[in-house]
Image (tube, rainbow, N blue to C red):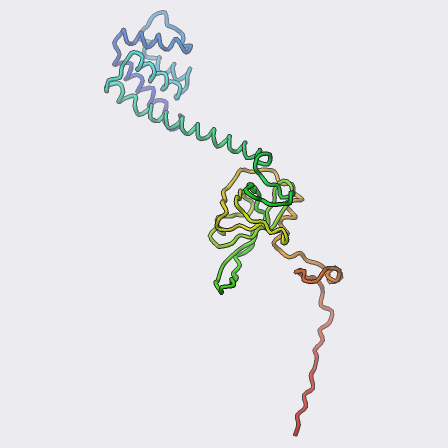
Length: 270
């Protein structure tokens, strides 16, 4: 128990044991024999003096607190003189045990998240409706906030994400600005109740979408690199642009060879 000093608990044990009469003390020592504490051939002054230290050495801080607490109930010594000394340490022991239990659940959940693809998780490689599936992804890129106007002339905000899982990458459109600061590049999240635009191949996150952070999982480097390109127009040469279909949005990279100025002749009637 890291937050309870060993010497403080050892001194408290000494005070508790001093409150026991000879019969109670022998009964307590007999109780400790059950979990493996060696039985003394004779209870001497030295044995009494070293017992608190020996209990800590054998059972640790948490274990020795638990044993003393059980022994006091067994004797029994539930009076305020003993319990007021013992109580704060038992309370702290309970807090530590709760933390340990919570830690076990966190560890269990982090392991369970790796099984989600088998249970309820939607792989980006798989086409079709998301329905109620869970989308677990790594955010590779995030755009700036974008202002747009609705059909009702309302001013709204949105932003884009380039995300990836173990199988593929996809573009995500997040409506609203509320989640902008909460979603960070390089972090892992789960999304549930999203919309899938099959035509545009864009996942849409709305106000109904439930989002939470999740544990790390492996994303292939090539998949991550491709996801990083999804929210920015790729750069092409002019030759490549001529091969594309109409209405494709791209950025063009080239060198300006010549600038021509068209002159217009004006004539006036007079």
